[in-house]
Amino acid sequence: MSKTTVQVDPLAEPTERVSKGFIAVLSLTNLGIWTAFFAPIQFLLPLQIDALEGGGTKESSLGLVLSVGALVSLVASPIAGALSDRTTSRFGRRRPWVLWPSIASFGVLLTLGHLTTLGMLVIGWALAQLTLNASYAAVTAMLPDQVPVEQRGTVSAMVGVAQPLGVILGGAIATFVAGDNTEASGQDLRYVVVAVIVLLTAALFVFSIKDPKLAKGTMPPLQMGPFLRSFWVSPKEHPDFAWVWLTRFLVILGTAFVTSYLLYFSIDVLGKSADDAPGTVFSILLFYILALLVSTVIVGPMSDRVGKVKPFVIGASIIAAIAMVILAFAQTVAVAAIAAFVMGVGFGAYTAVDLALISRVLPEAGDRAKDLGVINIANAAPQVLAPFTAGLIVQAFSGLGYDMAYGILYIFAAVVTILGAVLVVKVRSVP
Image 1 (tube, rainbow, N blue to C red):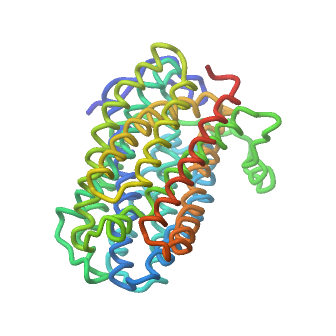
Image 2: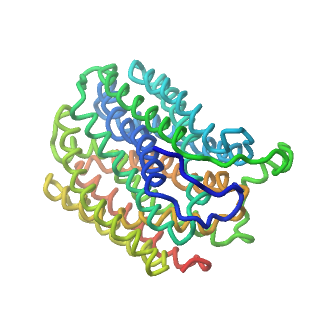
């Protein structure tokens, strides 16, 4: 694939429309990263921990692993983004931060399959989050770096599809790649497949995308005090940035309450065995991805045509909340599949315009990756809060039955998501 022609000035507001090849490469690179996030989160880590502990402690143990990893991502993404903004390599600002962290994450993922204690899984997943988030910060910055405003809904939609596709690809790996769910080390080959996907998609980005070089001296010298203070984006000076951060936090938090224990939900509520649960989750998610793909492909370009973003974000969040209410009363695979379909419609629409909204409230052109990293805290923080909070809710109400416990959890998730939808109206600078 030939390299794409882009802006010569890396700090200029992009005006030249990007090619289909650029969009395809950016989407595939995101797919590799999201697969590496979701295959372990949704399938491999729960199966490892269930083989290690099982019983009533698996939820809290999984919550510990996921929360520590998400805590690392809170720091990794904005710091890597800020350093990416300042990188003056002859290969550009973003490509080095995709290449080296991806190589490191390849090694970490290969190691994860061999870990057989809870403590080592905590450390291993934290390192995976560190390396993957460093790469993700650079990849995400390509949207405001090189995509003009009038094209961002479409590109945001195509890139956004990578996130749920990562869940589906992770489910396919857990279902169709050989493994032993009774042993903690039984996920080894599945981690190998995930690691190879990350490395191949990163290589595609590095060798296909042209990344303008930042001239030395363009950015002020790095001083620790100002550098650390730069991570605080004043809500008073940049209120729209703050509102977008908060609304994203709430919507992602509501979604994380649903996804954190989806595999355990299929075991404890739908009555599936540990061997059958991955296949059940995968089949449910097929309904999700079908609806999401259709919704995303329609809503992204539609947003560009009408020139509005907020109505789509609000409507999408409400639809996602309705899906959570349906899931709260699901006790069969069929009803769970219906909830997944509705969720796909809502979250597909949300994904289609989310990055387009975010990219239009970034404070400074020179800090795009750093500010996106700060926004990503709104994506990572729920991954810290949701596993522990969801685990506490499920354990607190499990005496009433797991169906009741998960029902309460998903109703709470719907309320949080609706709140996120309501607060989008506070954003003033974006229609």
